[in-house]
Amino acid sequence: TETVISPKTGRAIKAQYRVGLPGSDVVFMAGVYEDGHFSIVTTNANRWMQPVHPRMPLVLLPNEYDQWLLGDYAALVDRSGIELVMEPA
Image (tube, rainbow, N blue to C red; front, side, top):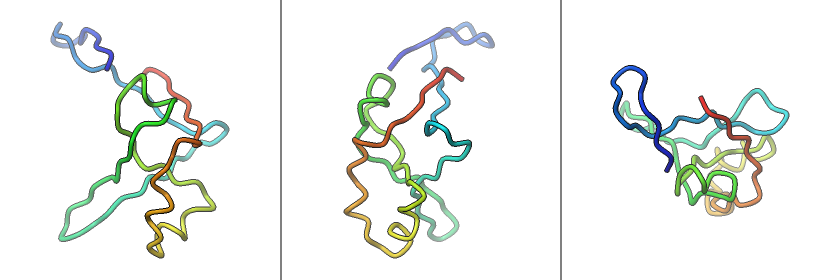
């Protein structure tokens, strides 16, 4: 992971990035909610995310929403073909 100097503290921090899908203003990520707690589901980083972090959110494409909500999770784990746009925050 890349580090940068914080303008507030002067210390090294992890670089922050905006992650998106090409041509889309919205990104849906798989998550779970239980007992008042919410967590984003992660998976291995694909080739676009790998230079930034070894893990990535499980990004859902519009045609996959029902698949996630209806419980066919295993088929969604491989995100290697999901192209991401990465830009410094």
